[in-house]
Length: 327
Image (tube, rainbow, N blue to C red; front, side, top):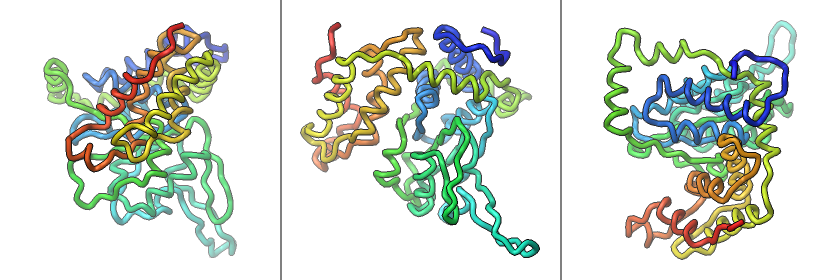
């Protein structure tokens, strides 16, 4: 499919091909993280937000910048720090001495792709500034509600190791994220390739700036609509609900996932179906997205934590216990 933007409505095959082009575009600068790129694109086309967690140097910021360059949309980055104020994120009203009126100065959150870098470095007061815009795609300043153009996506990063001077995200904030994606180290071959990319005269950072835009806002909206139109059988809906409800009664889980979990599982599963060129969701689509969607929505008991049981182990056990539809 050509990357030229036109007004013709996309077919399912064309949409799947367009998503592959974005994946290929990002993989030119981000090596060895294909699964992570797919997760982020799933969230984008499902209309959600993503929390990226990993140690420094794995390419979290690089991934977001490459995604923004691959899309012909606005991009803003906010470095979250302990002294960051809510108005530094969403904006504020400013008094104009000449006119004698208050004018609204929009913050970096008025964008399409927002990178909230090291979000847990800012206190809860600043983190909560994103609650309204993440849920309702609007920002209220001095009683005036201002809408944000579509698409709108927050990609927040955090470092799981260095916890000194950090503020854990409250449950209400975590629940706004469709997925929590954990970045691991790449394979040996990918790490060698990364060495080559980052030790050349033209650095990997420079190559990001040279990436071409593959999709614009209109094309993204079309793909999102195609994803929304993907067929979901009643059995698949029951399957997703059974998984989420099982998390609420699972031994060792103090608090299970809420309603947003099952909604997000179906939304993400629809995108997975489109990526694979299908117009219907399968049980495997549901399974493939469930771990990332449930990971940050469970609270484990102290006993499980002392035993060293991970969230992923609990979720995989839940998935294994719930019978998938056979037809």
